[in-house]
Length: 310
Image (tube, rainbow, N blue to C red; front, side, top):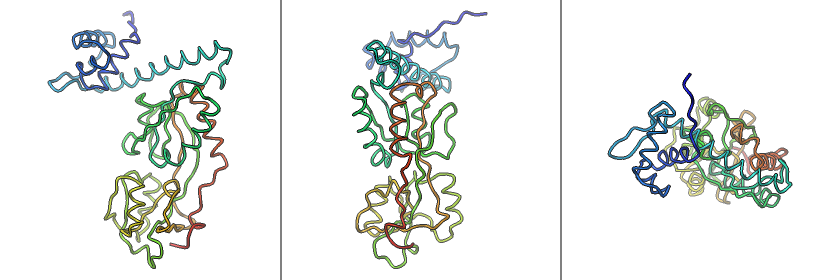
């Protein structure tokens, strides 16, 4: 049996730097090293792993499938080394492994409306109870890998995600709230369902699209916006109607009316995802508790209580 040669933390950092920077020279600059040193180290890393991790070219270094997988694991291992130090120091101060050990940076990936309307009060309570935690929120479009992909690739500790679509294997999490969709249209319009549809790419889930396909009154979108905020602005400007989830309608202007879509209206599941190892960490555990406390009894606003019928 061939003896296994483990990668050192510095080798993991080199691997991640090359993947993130897209080349050996850029990685060397980020690490304060030399291009030749990084190149030599990468050859050693590939020998230890037993696979080619990067395709070299004139324009830089592109991860192979093996390299993408290796970089994701490397980020997650390095993150756990950070957690090890923070929680060991907390235990050394007599805090134990409970909430008292919660500290250090906490990387959160969230889609736009969650970052704007769901996270701020939660993070305010989190940092009040755990002043040693430093939340870092990154807004990620919920398309392709989305927020869940940020966690799977080791770029985030936890994601606030729209659930109900396939997520990367190996992640754990739970539902925080179910938010209903509603019809949104310019205030006072006599026949909002006759208006053109304004939509955006992230406004989707398998269930929503199944419901959508059965509604013959919904036209193909003639106006496509960048995000839900732009959609709301377009509706407020009288350019059409939209079908939007409750979080996106937290601060609707007076020029917009929100109407119930009826008892069979679609809903969107909003939850959190993290890795099994980070789920056991004090900082992520503290965040999840705050999320659950904030939303365990939270009922999203009923659009029908806002205005009229669609």
